[in-house]
Image (cartoon, one colour):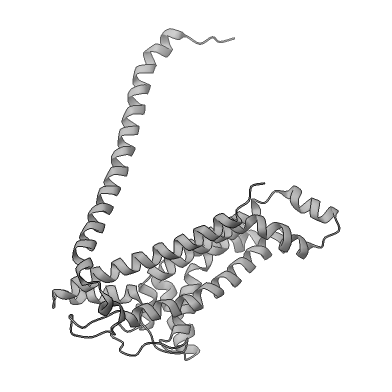
Length: 294
């Protein structure tokens, strides 16, 4: 039987405390570095962008004249894009998660599907842009309209919703299902009335992350051919459109020729951050309202 040697423990305690303090200091520096960079970026964006934000900037259409340029068309296009992305992503993503967790037979095929869905979450967004260009823009002959862009972005963020929904459904205690079955409920009644309400907070978290990514992505829409300068404002899902990130991208590039475009890009970034903040806040409030602990 071995006993703890207090002498050896005392000898090693100093080096262990030193290593602990070094690790804590390293992690603190990493955190501070990230916060400092974030603060500098936000300060620079607010400094350059806030003076340009006014009612005319929000309500005017796009123009080659920086003094007259506005983002109303980009705001409208972003909202129309979300009209397509949100329902498609939620219906397909949550439906897929329910099938894989509640109905699919556990085996190699099911594991293969789950693994590939998880892998899709790490695929570069430009690949989904090529897929959208091939399938929606050319094969289905939709062109660069809201529907084609929305379906492409839905494919991009779909794995995030599926994985998050699977984890939320898997986390629901099994005794809740067994209690429902014991009272005579069918499998679908159990899923609808017991499993989904309990998993709703986690599912909404996945949807929040997915929509936040969709509203900030640029590469897939650039590949599809979404224009930056678009004078008409979209009125439906079959109209051409542009969105805030695409407008920021092109104004940043054009700032090399016209310096004022950099200020327009900064102002648009402020509006995009505000839209993301509002969307996330509303979604978090909805999630917290339905959150329950079992």
